[in-house]
Length: 183
Image (cartoon, rainbow, N blue to C red):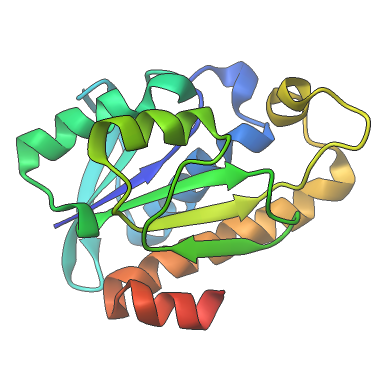
C-alpha cells in the first residue's frame, strides 16, 4: 500500500497559492484515477483507490502546513505503511518555477511543512518537489500564500501534471527509475 500526501493549507483562501501545489497534484491524481477524497480522519481528508494495480491512499492533511507531520504519522501508524511507500508532494522555492525534482530521502530545507513531516517520520521517504521559484522583491510568506499571477499559472499547472505523472512512475517502477526519468 502507498500513501501519497500532498502538502497544503485547508482553507479556501489558500487554494490558488504556490503553497498548495501538493493539494493540486493530489486533486489531479484523484481525478485521473477516480478516487474520491471524502473521508475525514487522521487530521486530514483522504480517499482509497488503485493506481497501477497497487492500493493507494491519497491524503490532504487538514492541520495547516506547519503541522502536516501529525496527520501523516496518524495514518502511517494506523495502516502500518513503510516509509519507502510514503510519497510526499510539496512546493519548493529553491527549485526553478516550472520544474520538478524527485528525491528518495533528504532534509526538509526551509519548508516548514516538510520540517513537520521529517519530525514525525524521519528523512527516508520519496518526495516530489514542485518548483515555485523565489520572489524578486517580495516577502517569502506573501509569495507562497499570495495569489499566483496569471503568467505563472500555466507553468505551475504543467508542473503539477508532471508531478502527478512522477508519482505514478514511482508506484509503477520505483523511485530510482522515476528519478532517472523525471530529474
